[in-house]
Image (cartoon, rainbow, N blue to C red; front, side, top):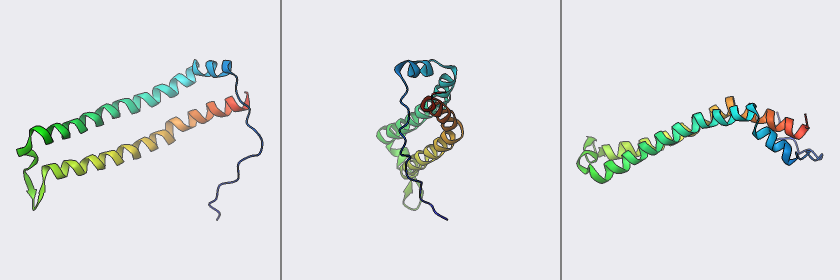
Length: 118
């Protein structure tokens, strides 16, 4: 089984006009795509920034709490620091699933219509 992608097509894709771009930007379909992206990305971004700032503030102003040993030489600061990395990767994974399921099909439909001139 070949895993290589086919070579790019030698035919040049049609470039849409400025009016076509404006028409698509004002369309309900594009508005739905933008809403779908924003309703996922913005709340998650705000939540992650709040979580990160909580970690920074606790590190600066709650040293005794952050220094509390949980087991062995593992303290609260270490656990929360590792949790920062874990949540970063989880958010990236979750976004990629969301984009593949909800955003990419809508964007591809708009793109193919724009390039195809339909």
